[in-house]
Amino acid sequence: MYYTQLTEKKKVEIDILLKQGLSMRKVGKILGISHSTISRYKAGKYKKRKIDITKRYEIFLNYLYSQYDRKTCSIEICIYKFKKRYLGIKCPSIKQVYNWINKGKIELKKENLCYKKRRGKNKSGMMRHFQWNLDNRTVLPISLRPKYIEERKEKGHLEIDSIVGKRNENESIISIVDRCTRKIWLIKAQYKNEYYIDKLIYNYILKNEIKVKSITVDNGLEFSALGLTAKKLGVKLYKCDPYCSFQRGTNERMNAMVRRFIPKGSSMKMVPQIYLDDISFAINIMPKKIFDFKCSYDVELIY
Image (cartoon, rainbow, N blue to C red; front, side, top):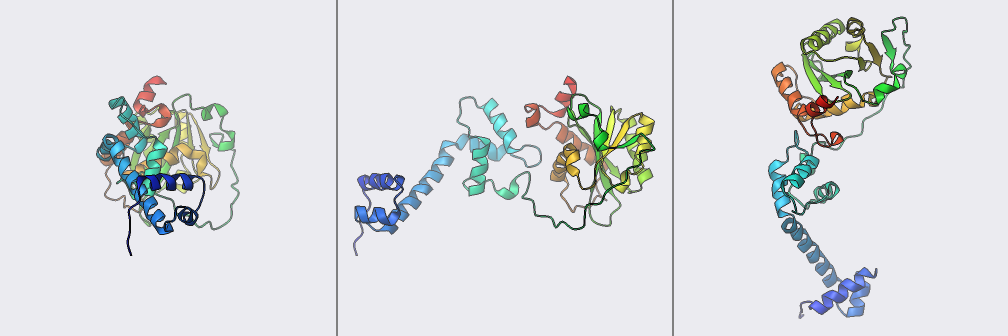
């Protein structure tokens, strides 16, 4: 059997007929060629297009591979810095880069991204109603938190949460986040006793001169005595509803950034306070898209 290569005229005819929505078999019958030939031509054309991407965006891709860091320099930050540094050089959009990664068109893989794909969690148990004790006006439910706190226009409104390590370990990390500036502080906790945690947070706030106007926490037992700190500081403590972590969205988001440095399941026993200070500094100097790529320290000077 003899084979002949497709001429340029035939290739143009194939492209025109395929754009009209005809199937490969139909195009093959019209042009008198096998549908498998059309299939191989289309596959070869896709490969050429893939090679063209690396040539067209060669400068950008080299910059991305050299600068991208899943801990401190995301794809959005890379694109922002590239546009400022290389004026007039063609740069793809953020969505386009993620499409390339999902389709395997560039060397950056899905597993190297800042956030891995979440696995579905098994929901067990029923939502329980919590009986709030309003005798002490210092501790209040989040439903009574004033609306001006939601506007994030002033510093001092803090969200506090704990980051746990391996199971059955007493050691944990206490994360404190300012709702306005997204500035984070991390504290190493040796025990989970509520009075120990309360004293630890109070001393850390005084030592670092953290401005406090209100505190929002979840229903963890380790924070059950935190009302004492709120009373000493003269502020209100707001507790979130059970199973409603979205009410502390800022805290949860910043905890996810901490997990880039300390993955889930890691032991907290050998994590010193000085390393936590380095992590919080790295996050605080990180450009953030919500602030037009300014860092938390820059935003802190504005308010």
